[in-house]
Amino acid sequence: MYDSVVHPKYSRGFTVVELVLVIVLLSILSAIALPRFFGRNSFDERVFFDDTLNAVRYAQKVAVATGCQTRVTISGNSYILLREDNCNGTSPTFTNSLTIVNPSTGNTAYTGQQSGVNITASQTEMTFDSLGRITPISSSVDNTITIGSRQVTINAATGFSYDSTP
Image: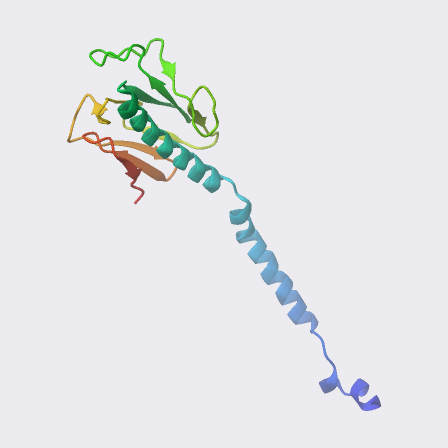
């Protein structure tokens, strides 16, 4: 028994070099990997992207269901859904625009915004007619909404919107 204390081949544990190496590796890993786990920008961007895509799809569904034209207006880092004033279909006016109720929250205005997330659109106002198409009708030009690094494409002829992120 006394032999195991005297001979180093029987001793157990880590050397100082091994401990320093582990500490250095952990510090490098924490400097590179941890900011990716705790950064909110990519999560905020994805959430706002999903919200915007769902809002565009809902605006199209409201237009088809009510027969009234609906509009998605994009400005800065926000959007709002509006319904035409009189639902006559011939010359829609959005001066006293009726806001569309958000079915998931019950808020009287279907809006969304996210600070720190850039949003750009090929058209800042997209109006859906009672058939779900974007008016004025143009079958050759798709509309795009870019949110950070993600992209929503809306087919002008059908109104179909989808995630077209490359």
